[in-house]
Length: 155
Image (cartoon, rainbow, N blue to C red; front, side):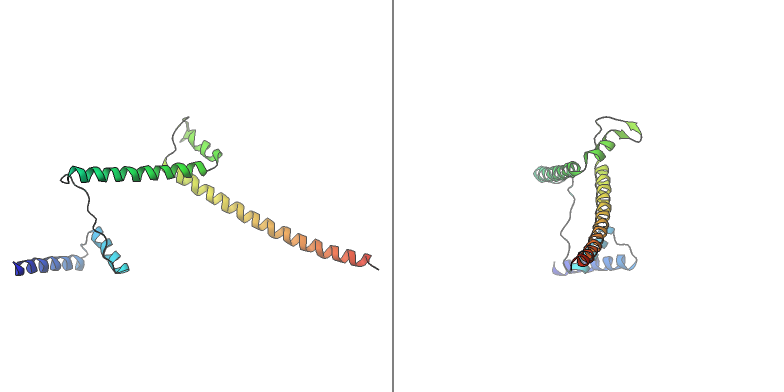
């Protein structure tokens, strides 16, 4: 039995090296290989649940997935509530130019709105920084002018 196990292992290794040589690695194998090369740690064992799995395992997996989706949806709702009401209202009421009152905003639209809001905030911040620089320069000029004016008035 010992030699049989070694032979199978050797055959598997030879097959894998042939796949690598001819670029026939599956994308998951390539990703696993990159993960191992970059971190030096083999990736965790990822296995999709199949119909043959015990019902309890599948049930637990379904519960975990449901919690994940719920948390993700909650975070999208939190992000949506942090956006200005005016931009949200503009999206909620229309879809492709058609009025649809009460329409739910998609996750993609939430991300687009958030990106646009962040860009608007960045532009506003840059404008305020420029205004602050101009006002600081004006204040320095006024202080110099005031100093000259007061200096002339002093005997």
